[in-house]
Each structure stands twice: as C-alpha cells, then as structure tokens.
Image (tube, rainbow, N blue to C red):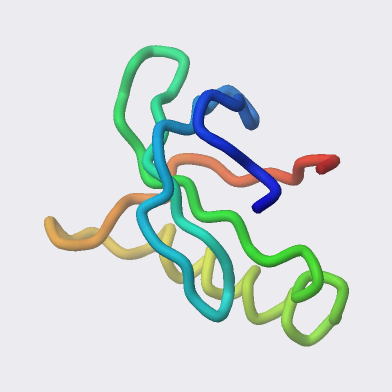
Length: 82
C-alpha cells in the first residue's frame, strides 16, 4: 500500500483504510480543520492510461454535481507526487 495511517496527503491525514476496489483505495481521513472525510486514491497504474484517466476525471465532474444525503460530496481533488 502506498499510503498508511498517520500520513498526510494534500492537507488530509489518513486514519484508516475503509475499502479497496478496481479503481483504487478509500481511506477515512481528517482535514486540517478536523472534518472527517473519505479520501479516494486511484491505483497509480490506472491513471497512466489516458482513457482510464479521462473516465476518472468524468467521474469526479459528475460527483461534484450530485447533491443527495446518501452521496459523499466532493470537496477537493488533486495530484500527489507519491
């Protein structure tokens, strides 16, 4: 695993791994202000493929537009050097 509990990524500190799927890993994390968030990190090799990267970017755009109590809101996106 590339990331471990206690590590900070883009202002979010990883608490624990919640799950893993075909696209990546989801962690429970805390923002700098203490807000609990879900942190989704795609598998690095998937983002090397332009088609998969485009699909992931579309997923982010669609997710930003959804407002529902059962859907996590996208609060930020970014790239990490790791």
